[in-house]
Image 1 (cartoon, rainbow, N blue to C red):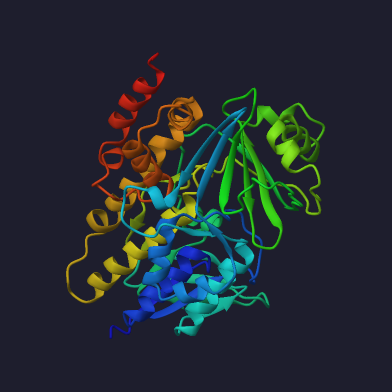
Image 2: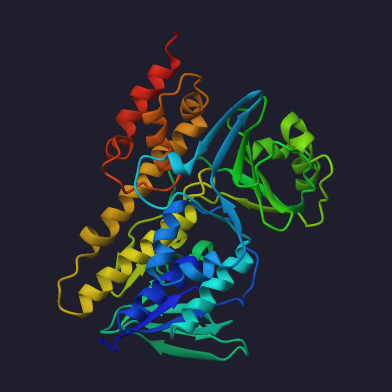
Length: 408
């Protein structure tokens, strides 16, 4: 048992998973969360790779029993073209299904499970300053009653997501390589009455006239859905307001307009803009960044929670090695393997917006073995080097795009 004190900023998926893993390894683990749970969060569609990290953290039984919507794959739609991917047909070994979750319930469940395992969570405690210049990290924290106190730790993990606490406090922010995009989204009572509609599939719909604008439809188990549209800000700027833009764009797609003809829009339209983010380093003296606190790409393939949980799993292993004399190398054992998966996702996200990946997904003569390899990436298995579309993602994808674009 190490007895070392690890402070984690944020009780979202990466924070709760990391805390549970470290608690199992004998660390004294404390989470500082600036909000109370349950609270709304975007990112409701998990990937099967997530299930391995949930299982590793001892939370799989609770998640399986929670009544979330089973997710078996993804349906891609563009006009009259439909391409379905079923995770059970993937190339990589691992979980063949996952869940579509309302994040308020899901995140609260993970946090509760972490507490059940002995993790201490201080709710409504906000980190306002951080000092890593001395032997041990020192955080300045403001609690729910506006009292300020200092907390010393042996190590700090930033799992603050889009709050990006340490990147802001330590000037670690770095420009993203992606163009600025904006997402408008809401939750609806979908009232879908269509015999061929599969609630176990996330639906990704390409706008009929703008190939770089797309919609998500994520059904939940209670008759509600998450609905969103993503595009560059100029797409939305010609409308009177964001609500008008959202409803107009949804109406422009015939498949969505028909499917959601009876939907009840009972929740305000939310927006995030310029969400892609990067940092100059994922770790430093006494700290490391998990999930969205380090880097976020794009919502199109639901990679955010997967990357967050992977970072938690890697960080727990490195910290265990660091404090138990086994020799820890944050670059070799954390930053590089994490970045490898992020870069694989980046290859396919970039190709989605250029239209190259859309040509692959909607290709009408797909080979089963290649489709299975692409399916593995859509399932989040982007650390599987046995998959050539992971190991050599850019060159393999380039060859595949050329094949799909060659006339028969």
